[in-house]
Image (cartoon, rainbow, N blue to C red; front, top):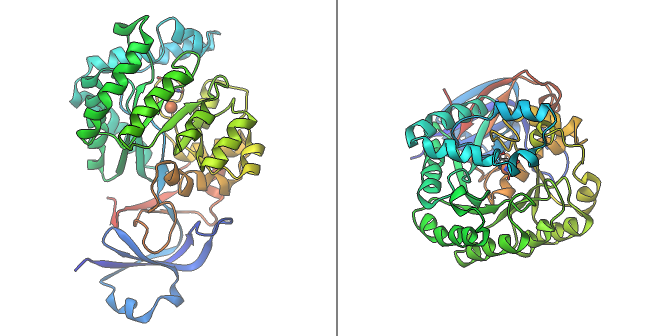
Length: 403
Ligand code: DI6
Ligand code: FE
């Protein structure tokens, strides 16, 4: 029989209503194995379930939220790009550096040079930093290998992070940049990206497919070919869309029923409407907005008005967002994008789950995964209010308390 544990004396932030925090004072959670069997006011816990409890944990009135989900990262890579940061501070733009062969391609060279153990050490250290602030589900993209073997290497490393006690989802981003051996042959490279996909899928290495649709990366027509290859394998798609310019990527992604479009600073009205109609999540990335000193804001009012679900993520990568703090993303989403603290927390929980196609997490309700965080806070808005302070007391992932 699976062990049941009663977590009581908690203030639950269930996020189960469509709006509002879904606060439950004097709340309790009943976990059974890796699932939540029940969540609600302790006084309403059915008596027969109370009798089945094998262990009890008191939480002293602490705040309990769903476990945090980082739905967009590039966590596996070699090297770092602090010298490029200095160049940008002296006036060079992200695009100029990319066009001059730096940027993503510099990281590709460092990633190819690293072996799997080295990549795994770097990625695990970064994942642990995210876990220190309550991460329970992590998405990791490839896109710094750019050959079949190198992409497979990075995806294996990403999947291996599950050993840290995390749920991991991996996304194939072969169409991230053009590798040097394909210089001048962009369409041939897109063919190769599509040709590698069945093998990676067969090896169980990918949950979704992404592309970077941008002036400095791939055109909408090339992106479409990548999405068609994904569709043939029944793999869901996502897109780095309208980060530096409006390419109409969001409409294209919506046409393929994309799980999410990410970045979106330059998203226009037509893109918003297409995403709303397709149920595509808008993943906003305040870390990249901040670090690239972007000034074009994502169209918050239009997204809200159209009812597009909004998620947040770190976009952790060495070029445009080297940060490793989910709590800082909550704060930045509020200060930079004028999101409410509640929208921001939904962005790292229920809407982030949706951006990954996961319906079994992101809220505290019966049947969900038993992924939750215990915080030293009196109200959930405090999570977005402080920055540089970590009030996390404990994380439970898949029913298991983390040491
Ligand atoms: N957009 C980004 O911001 C990251 N990738 C992408 O498509 C940046 C990746 C990098 O600079 O290494
Ligand atoms: Fe990204």
